[in-house]
Length: 343
Ligand code: ATP
Ligand code: LTN
Image 1 (cartoon, protein in one colour):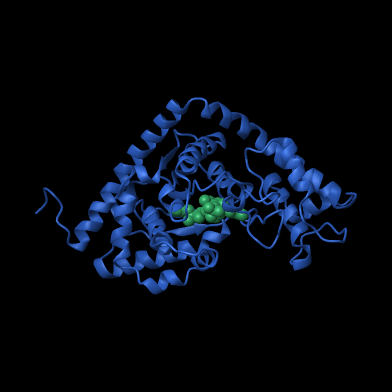
Image 2 (image 1 turned 180 degrees about the vertical axis):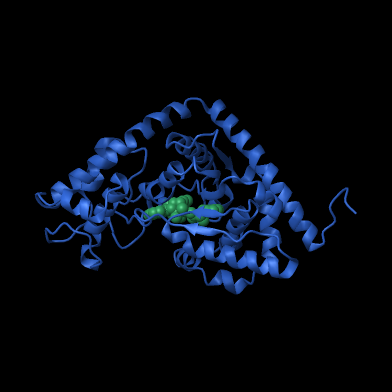
């Protein structure tokens, strides 16, 4: 590990995104936009985590379509295949194997405490073992690459903490093997809330609920409509606020701030002369439409050449496989498994 790290000129970034639905604005502002902006400064690995997606029920044909569509969206958003290794998790078998190894050092109690798990099981009748194990697979994703940084939205903070705990436990049991990574959470856009209900996080899995999410592929008219319907309050005060009553307005301002990159004061000044919430909604919608327009066009072009898309993903899987297979071998060696060809 130390040798590999000494040779590294840039900090290594690893992140993942589930192909569990159509990519929504929260995914973009909380994660993807930051990945794109920092890609020159980092060594980048971005994984489409299909094995995570199947921890909740998926329709097979939909999942296949969504996986390719998500890959196209990552490139359309600006990830450059020359600078980033973009790949599908199930194409690199080290992830599932690494998960098994880490399962054997992770106490079940750690997993039962995860808030996302508790939240998801409260909404399901039958809970798959994979859902409980979800964070261990995520830990394997990250640790197999000796990632320095994990750029994610705020909802993933606890999972990255758990990854650190698992790394430390493994290192303690078997000797220094894994780098202990850090979560990188954006200052703006880390928690975009549902437009229909500003008390719940915007999520792909709820994207079918009318008015909940902005899908990155939505047509301008649709985006306008979603914002027009966004839940606010009965007042007319346009400012950032922690008041639960004003969560809707706060969310709209947060989206605007994340897109424009302006400070809180600048954003509030921008709306100082606005005529009520109608005006606010129209201008936030406009900013989102302009931000997403080129993505939609590039996505459309990429989806028309699936051969090229699959080729890029195959290159990504090969690069990712080279790094993670090597690490997995080290893990197996540490744990006392016989490595073919080794004493
Ligand atoms: P699902 O509904 O299937 O759980 P999701 O929409 O929550 O999906 P993920 O694929 O789990 O999205 O997350 C991908 C990335 O997007 C993660 O870094 C996550 O933190 C971030 N993210 C997801 N939702 C939001 C949100 N509402 N605001 C900010 N970031 C988000
Ligand atoms: N659980 C993450 C997706 C994910 C991930 C990762 C993120 C899977 N593996 C590794 C960062 C690093 C989520 O966003 N729901």
